[in-house]
Structure formats: structure tokens, C-alpha cells
Image 1 (cartoon, rainbow, N blue to C red):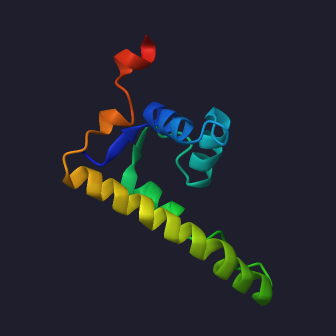
Image 2: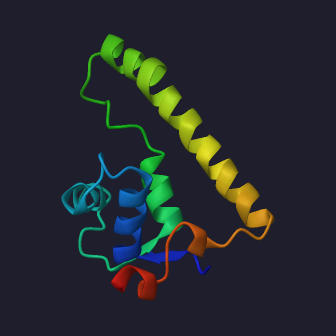
Length: 109
């Protein structure tokens, strides 16, 4: 790929990964938080960079910030890295993105 994904395909990907957790409004809220609310083509690297940043903890008390980083952030970061490693592995073995995101023809049918 070229490092970009259409907003529509990103929404479909999130919904396919976890239909109980993701719908159009939640993906829009995520993109809004990332400063991409009006963007039709999403740059992977920019989105991943934003996702990898911890939730702003500057206004939290030191103990709460420490707890968040140790209990929540570390687990999320580990899971994200595992997913990225799996994607890289599938890509290295000629995995087709169409196996995850069906073509527009399939979606329209």
C-alpha cells in the first residue's frame, strides 16, 4: 500500500475487528480525537503515532498517572505491538490486505 487508508475502509476494518465495540460514531470520535475528523484519507503512520501516545495524564495526580501507565498503558502498548508484529509478519509472507478488508464490490453486494 501507499501508507494511506480511506476513512470508509478504516471504519469497516474497526467494525470487522470488533463489531460490539466499534460503530461509525465511535470511529469518528477516535478520528476527531486524533485531529482527523474531516479527513477522508487517513495516513497510517500518523494514526498509529497518535494511538501510541498515552492519554494525556498531565492533569492527573502523580499516583493516578503512575497507576495508569503501569496498569493500563503498558498492557495496551504490548497488545498494540503484538498486533503490529502480526501485521508485519503477514505482510512479509505476502498476506493480502483484501483478506481483512473486502473489496468495495464485495461490500456493496
